[in-house]
Image 1 (cartoon, rainbow, N blue to C red):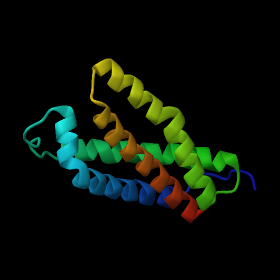
Image 2: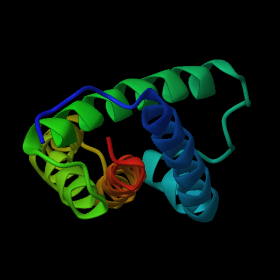
Image 3: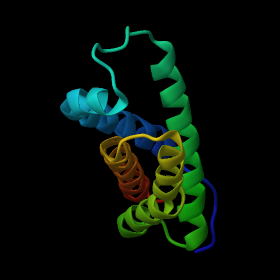
Image 4: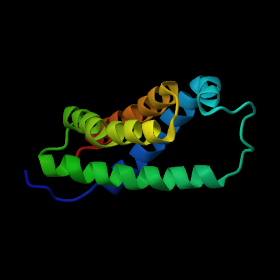
Length: 132
């Protein structure tokens, strides 16, 4: 079946699921993340980083949906595999390079890369679940 377009409800659901995954991930690893970035106190909570994060997740889900749709039939398996390869080829490599030049700790790279792996796999799963 040729690519017919993007399911925007799937994009929204994928962004919401990914946002929830991120909340759980950093909720569980918040202390380790703070130690990895050298913080002793949590940052003052403000809404702007969360708004920016959600908008970025919407863009990411939209782009991933487009990639999955161009592969062929939109399925859960194709979504998950596409999410994994998008993470491996673009996100993991970018974080490793950026963190090495910034002199960041490897623990930060592992925490952040694990987050983005989960985000993209969750997004791919949700997009695949919705299908076309």
